[in-house]
Image (tube, rainbow, N blue to C red; front, side):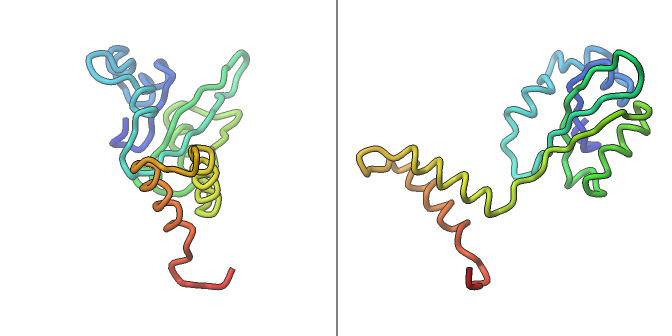
Length: 142
């Protein structure tokens, strides 16, 4: 699934979209799709989405897409899903946090992790990382 840039957590939809067996769609004998999403540590951004197919009684399911693999921006997952699963009643793609939001989150987390004004070496490294992110590489005035 990752080779195409889309990961689906619903087994039936994964079987249909990728023409795979239930064994493969569940990740049996390898990694579950949920664990691949949860444990992803590479530098590729992963964007989560929630979709619902048209028709009575359809539930909402989740998935992820890899923007570096599935080109075309935020519209790409809809096109991809509808080509393989049919029309969608809804699709919500998680927004990517901006650099400023990422810096704010990191600095807030670092502040909560301080104790007695002492950082562990790991926390010092994390704090330095967010300090670097907070600096404007073009030295523009705020």
